[in-house]
Amino acid sequence: MKRLLYETIEIESDKNQVSNILMNGIQLLKIDPNIMGIEPVAENEFLILRHGAFNRQDMLLILEKQNSIEYKIDGQIIDYSIIWEFETLDSGITHLTQSFYIDETSRITPILSLCNTALSKFFSTFLENIKRLAEISTTP
Image (cartoon, rainbow, N blue to C red; front, side, top):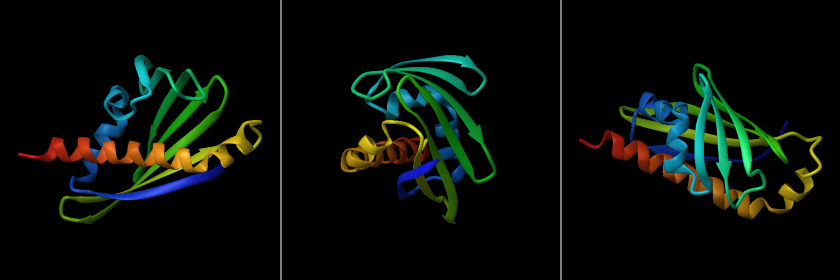
């Protein structure tokens, strides 16, 4: 897998709150504006229907590790992974790094490399939406 981009953000919420949002596939409806629908298939596995994206249909598998969560996406056109890494900075503040990886053997990899600015903007918005949702969830 080749890492195409990564970005980090500070979230005024604890690691558990951020992790719970990322582990709940249905929350993607609130985070990703391109998602039209999500259907649970199995534990931590979801069928995602999209518009305005390379893949119109994805199979998402969510894997949780000690300090990270991985989204493994098996799509119609491209397969990719998003890895979220957590670091607790201070009481109630989480440092979240989002990395986007794509299969280097995919024919679409060179095209995605050319679209790096658009991808970066999309994933930056995605990360900001996670921050917003986590911070709203922790507001008393």
